[in-house]
Image 1 (cartoon, one colour):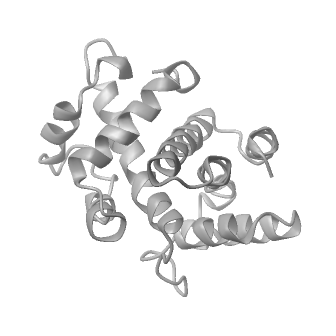
Image 2 (cartoon, one colour; image 1 turned 90 degrees about the vertical axis):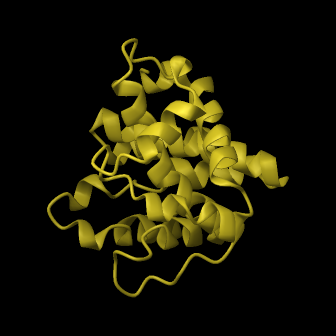
Length: 187
């Protein structure tokens, strides 16, 4: 599966445009992280793009996500590395999902939550433009536990022990990746 196929796929499974934008943001972060690690940028970006492809299907039973997307990707004979990363991004809140194992798994697990925090920080800026957001802005809001409560900071914090990237540097990589696609994100 390449990027264009992934985009067509998520647009066929997801009606909510904000959810599509979230997947675009995660895809951009994953691509940037792959570049940082010298890994396959297409593979990592596709994993980010498709990771929530079944989320909307399970809005009333979120504990079932990401079961259907894993099955759908298997049916399409998608690279097993993508399937594993997508499945393992549900670790910790869905039963019987193994802990992330590879760098790609951990990158998806950690940046998934970070994109939500960065988006929330953007939306409270006077300009509501991601290009105006700085790493310091994200770090300042990080400390406010009531701010973007749904962005699980404990998941993001696996960036250092599992990926070897300090929090500030991790935020920098992801923020810059999201800023590059600001028009696609509508931010």
